[in-house]
Structure formats: structure tokens, C-alpha cells
Image (cartoon, rainbow, N blue to C red; front, top):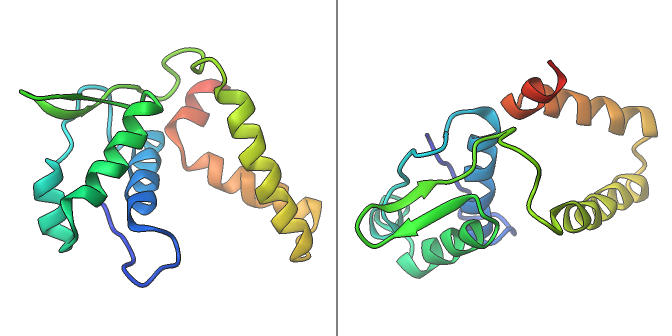
Length: 133
């Protein structure tokens, strides 16, 4: 898995790390049992504070996407399409989706354009392909 972040972005670095790992899982680049770099190693690779990586890993752990063990470190816990989402996930996801759709509307994207972009994005994720087949 190759992670890239933009140190000049308005999006916090920990959120970028979290988002890139979620995307890697969705694309099938990171599967259940795959190890993640240690927080210190990833921090050194990016030239950032290891607490920033800790925050990203903690979010992923809370979301049930990774497990962290003192001996084995952080590993991917959830494979795309591995079953129903955790309780409450759908409601939290829908709230985030509502905000994104509101932003698209405010910035003038048509419904057709939003649907086209969503379909194109989903087609790049392994989980979407698994669910539709």
C-alpha cells in the first residue's frame, strides 16, 4: 500500500492518513491481516509527529477497520464486503453523505453529474464490485 499525503492541504494530516487507508481497503490494496507501518515509521517517512499517525490509527481502530496489538502492531481488520456494517455506521455515513451532497448542490453540480461521479468512484472500489456480482 502506497500512502500519499499533502502537507499543504487544509485537510488535517491525520484525516488524510485515515482516508488513504480506507481507500486502500476499499480498492483491495490492503486486505484483512495486512500489517500497517508502525506509527513511528510512518511518521518518519512523512516527516511528521508520530502522535499524528497515532490519531489516524486510533480513528481507524474505533471504526473497526484496524486492530492494534502491542506485539504485532496495527493490521487491517475488515475486508470489503466482509458482512454487514457495524451498528450505527449507516446513520453516521448518511449524515456525512448528506453534507457532501449539500456541498455539491451549493456549488452547482447537477444530480446527473453527482450520480455520474459517484458511479465512477464506486467502480474503482473492490467492495462495490463484490456487492454487485
